[in-house]
Image (tube, rainbow, N blue to C red; front, side, top):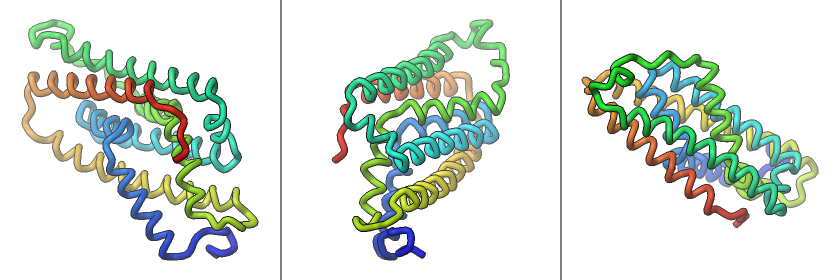
Length: 220
């Protein structure tokens, strides 16, 4: 089956699984979003964000399989446009969290509970934070071919198979992260701790936006 798809052998696929695990555990926008939404709104919100993130990975996997991601690698304009859109969205999220942290505990706006966000809204945020990150597209384009045999007759099918495995493994990992964050959310909390959480999250999102703005399209 592996040879039919043109995928590398069993040992190389084990390396692929290990590499995906390391990449999943590396702190970044996706991990931060899943944790922050779980701590702020509960496990259902975290699950919705995690599923949205991996829906975004589906888009990137399809783009890599059908050559769309290659456009980002060779077109500086396309890369810059997507990069600026992604950074702007991350900054918008950061500003929202920092505004919540800035409000004093006695502020009537801070004391009133925030209106509940729909699960669809959390799913949409997850999709957008992932899809608007051109580095994810270039990652799929640079990473997946290393595990496909050079003479494979069905490279598109091999891309899709590896992309599907990546998405399944990433989904399982993020759902595990949500489960851990949900347990932490049950610990006693204070308004001050919530403010610090929002401040830290806002600063991290702003930092990730800055890093995205300074990134360049590199394939290795």
